[in-house]
Image (tube, rainbow, N blue to C red; front, side, top):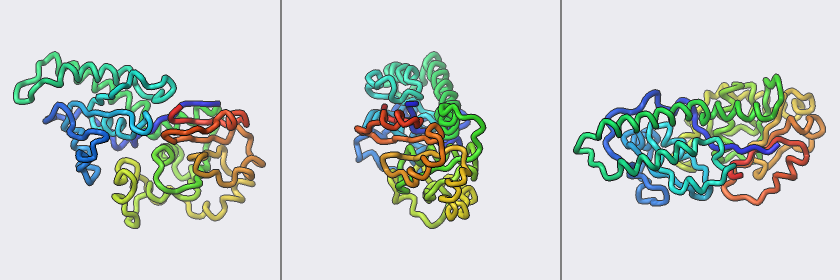
Length: 298
């Protein structure tokens, strides 16, 4: 009942092909060095990775960072510091072997000067690895892929309606990105309560004022994908078992209606997510109750 999970990235953020005319071997954006955090808009930030052959990423508070997926999605190869020490069940959905290949390939590139042509054999090796990484990202690391992964791992058949409950509506990367993926799979038949406002397109939110300047995880969905009428009937809809499955976006940040849900739903139809960087949660308590639990830093 316990499964690893990772962050993900919306499919529309992933480049369709390898960006041409790269102008630098290594991105100037260095994780942990705030003096390099100079990008104020998503297009500007993404362009930095698209013009770079490689970009450094690393563990910060947790091994999993949205940065990994942003680098991949923009057609750049991560230089993942110390990836070989990542626990086997953390970043379990990511291509760690390809990341290690990327580190080795960077060693061949790092002393090159772009005023001289890159040798053809290195160009070919680079393109081949980046194509693998992009293909893997599209297949396994998009939000829609993670949404499908969650439903598959529950073992439940015929899921058509999802209730996604949150005790907190502020930014939470795992909750927000996973909800986006479930919305991609089920549309308005995945109902988020309470509404997570910043993942919807609107002029009423200062996206740049959100965590991470709102990049990658905000302003994604059409407003019509949230059924306002279902907000008013959520409690009765739970009693009437309108939804096939109930997902808690973070069991650390609140589990509204849990007692009511457990009166109506079998335990295996209640799914719990943990997206914390560093936690001491007893997920065995929840799997012991029969819930499917997904933990990011497992």
